[in-house]
Length: 202
Image 1 (tube, one colour):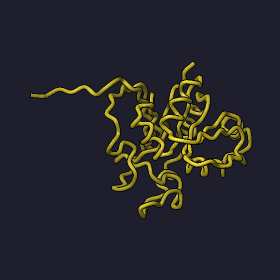
Image 2 (cartoon, one colour; image 1 turned 60 degrees about the vertical axis):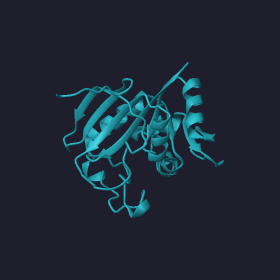
Image 3 (cartoon, helix red, strand yellow; image 1 turned 90 degrees about the vertical axis):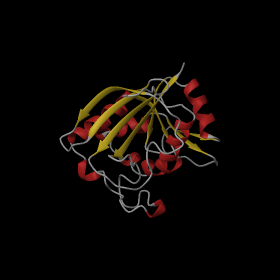
Image 4 (tube, helix red, strand yellow; image 1 turned 180 degrees about the vertical axis):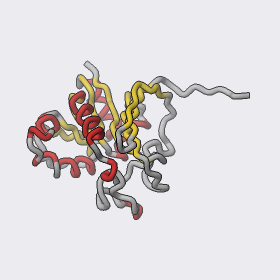
């Protein structure tokens, strides 16, 4: 038994993942660009997100992402995608106990690097991490991410929380898939491929 940890997230061309959905989603450090994702959402985007959910056995979220998603998805009808995400096991990492009201949610209290390592060991299938920048950085440092599914949007923000911030453990990646929506969003899938390789052009 072993889970496969897959990070699925939205990033700008300069690697920013902060506040994609709306102005108030994450305005920490006075981030002024919230809501950069919605103008690029189209049928192709919806299809990609639906396919990602279909492949997932469970979902892993940080506390803030859990609060955002749990305020929306429980009210979504089954035929509009609610059945899958509301029915699957969901894990939320937190350092302090919390009440989880979203259906099938399990709270992982403690250091995320340790609790998620245990979850991977004890869980089968794809564990999908959606958003959750702080959690993703913790998982990167602990070298727990097996795959990235990135939706890269045609915007440059110039500031904000980056997906691969300083302090990320170096890793080699292998491109395993790509697709482009009509709105110009590029979906890239990368698997971990050991440590980076270096060379010289001289």
